[in-house]
Image 1 (tube, rainbow, N blue to C red):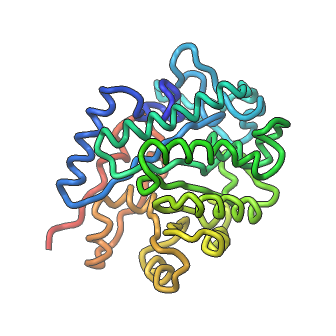
Image 2 (spheres, rainbow, N blue to C red):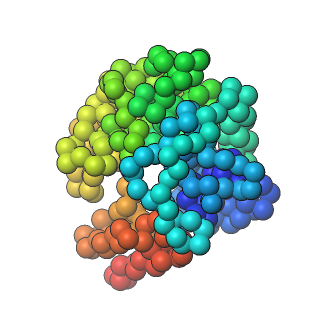
Length: 304
């Protein structure tokens, strides 16, 4: 999380103080020691959190007062499931400007911790996506209404982070078609076109676009919109397995494919794919728990 004490998920790790920087340095050193590269996704959940998970004095906040009505529940720090608040605090202009600075400082801290770069999380119904999508954003000021206005916060953050750590170290994640957390865009193709063109101008390291909706059986077309309008490295994903990923890249539909659930359930995913070893099945019920179960206890494949 980018903002001090604003935990979207119970026990979500932060990047806003020296202890956290020192802790992350152990992770980045281990990754680099094994020949890997690692970016930190910097994030603010907006209305997608519980009051119980926030530091004292904070309140659940978003672009407007409209909370999540039907999405379901989230875990508290004690492991209890509770519904999201139906009404939240609407951010003021000064508060929005302060959030931009939270992301900028998070990016600086990430580089200090040894990360190779950061990814600004503008997807999946969290704060930046709440501003982008008009089902959530009904503001009438410079942060609402038109597509450029609704995308303003994301681009201000990207510009600030680029200035702080360099464009070659900055990536962005978008989910034009995803309806997770009740975030829906009435014209996702035009919004994607605008953002891709703006991000192309900024020459960021890469853009990660989720091709589809989590809740849809269709493949989705958001990656096609992005490929047409974004001129840099394009990553994509959602429901793509290793074999399909190889085809995707060969056909130049994307430059790389992102694996989330597969990678979580298979800590040695590249080796399993190379050797044709069967993949572990993901335990969905452990994805958002409050213990180490489902986090670091999936088995590795046997040695050759």
